[in-house]
Amino acid sequence: MTITPEALITAAQNSKAWPFQEAQRLAKRLPQGKPGGVLFETGYGPSGLPHIGTFQEVLRTTLVRRAYEALTGQPTRLVAFSDDMDGLRKVPDNVPNKEMLARHMGLPLSRIPNPFGTEYESFAAHNNAKLREFLDQFGFEYEFVSSSDCYNSGRFDDALKGVLANFGAIMDIMLPTLGEERRQTYSPVMPISPTTGAVLQVPIAVVDAAAGIIRFTDEDGNTVEQSALGGMAKCQWKVDWAMRWVALGVDYEMYGKDLTDSGIQSGKIARVLGGHKPEGLIYELFLDAKGEKISKSKGNGLTIDEWLQYGSEESLGYYIFAAPKSAKQLHAGVIPKAVDDYWQFRAALPGQEIDKQLGNPVWHLLRANERHEGAQAPGAGDTLPVPFSLLLNLVGVLGAGATREAVWSYLGNYVADADPAAHPALDVLVGKALAYNRDFVAPTLHKRAPVGGEVAALQALDAALAEADPATGAEDLQTIVYEIGKQEAFGFDNLRDWFKALYETLLGSEQGPRMGSFIALYGIAPTRQLIAEALDRR
Image 1 (spheres, rainbow, N blue to C red):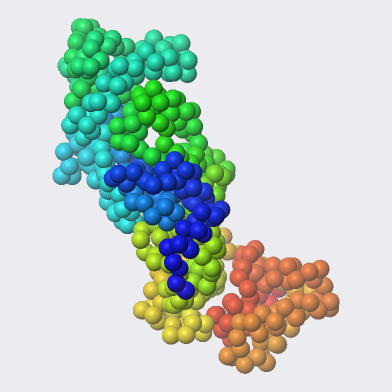
Image 2 (image 1 turned 90 degrees about the vertical axis):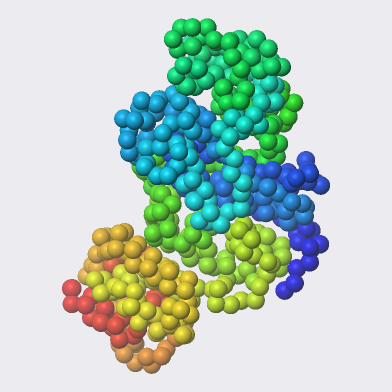
């Protein structure tokens, strides 16, 4: 199916997919783009290492970026901005050499020695390198920009002079939002102490805005008059955000719901500085399994590494794609469904019309890193021959004998050309299924004994399977199971109760796969052995 640029633009103009909804709003402001490309930004605080929040923000921003390009045909850029001029306020729990860091409290992160013993010259430089490695791992296209480089090189000087020239107006915006005690020490610009190098939270007086000269009381009590330019000061957070938007010319930036108030104040300050607030999405935050806000200090969330141990990168992207304005729980229990849902959408993509494709999450995810060139004919890379949930059931039944080789031997019952080299995506998921089963499924499995009419129903299923050809397909096996469950003699109120009994007695879980597919995968003879073992537990 060939999709012309004109057809793509028309579909993009009418798409209800959220990246296109965002792109359509941005296109109203910049329908023809701008010289140098429309600028998207995502921010990062290098006091800690990149995490799943970093990934989701860069991914979602990239999805909107690609949607805008498809909609307008205009070039774009993405800046990953590190706020490494921020002063260290707290020693992180997960770093070495805490005592050394404690001696440098208050200094800009880019001017604190590296506690990790790596080749990088500062704490921020190490974490910035980790950020770039992290983004490169997932193939994101971006430009890295650091706050310290912008301040130290003078790139922010003109915008900083604008802050000083509009000092009173900015104070009028900020002071009503602060408590009485904070008002006494608040300043939009924080000077760098000439004696200690710390970022100071002290009031300042603007001596000469055009020259960038300020006056303040240093930590030793002396009055200091010095330039705020060239890395000798940095702005407070909300002012800094606004100044960055104006200085860099940011057109789009999304942020979490917890920064809603910051976005409002920074937008007002950006207008005072002669710029504007970028377009952007306010997204909901992730929750843990209990519905509580994820906290790095509590460790109650799921890390990128943990997700990738049990699920694929694509499944993580799929889970992040959906409903960014809705709070979602992020825990290991959501991974299997995310994996299967991703592959269902991927299998559907090649045969869809363009308007349906633009509503398909996989279209956006493949395009995010330039891996998608429009609809393609179905192939080995577009389908997963065995659902992940079915893999998990197979691994669970194999128990202690579950190895990669054992799983592939059973896959031969179900998959043509059952070889890892022929199905690399499936082979990756075999490893994920083994890890997921080991850590989350096996500890909870409990196969109960059949009771009441379940006994006769299992005996009937065993007899039917004994008569079936070993090559019987999944659909015919499903019909056999289905017809037994419908027989009134076994006393099931509905088919759901029959399938639940099969899951609990044969698989040891409350939920399970289509039993026809499972029997085809596991094999008729091994399934009859499961039934025999269940009947022996009476």
